[in-house]
View 1 (cartoon, rainbow, N blue to C red):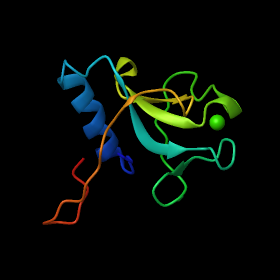
View 2 (tube, protein in one colour):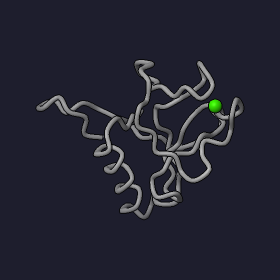
View 3 (cartoon, rainbow, N blue to C red):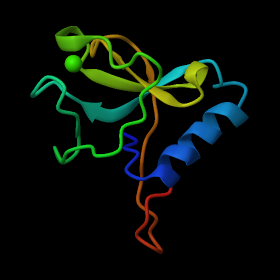
View 4 (cartoon, rainbow, N blue to C red):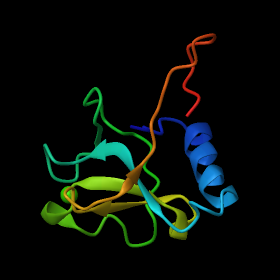
Length: 104
Ligand SMILES: [Ca+2]
C-alpha cells in the first residue's frame, strides 16, 4: 500500500490523481491508520508514527468509527478518514531496485 512519508511523495500521488482522468474522481487507500489508538496515526507496514498528515478540510472526522485513510482525488489529493471495511481502490508501493527509493 502506498504510504506517503514525505511532501514529495504526497505531492507525487496527488499529482497522479489529478493528471489521470480515469482515476481522477476516485479515492484510494493509503497505508495509514489509527485503528490501534484513536487519533494516533501510524503507517500500516511498520506501525511508525505519521508525522506529516495531509488531511482535507474538516478531516479526520470519523473518530472511532473511521480508522483507515484514503487519498481523495475530489479533495485534490488530501486525506480523508473512512470506515475500514468500505470498498475502495488502492495504490501499491514498491521499492526502486536501483536507488532504493520509493517510486510509487
Ligand atoms: Ca479514528
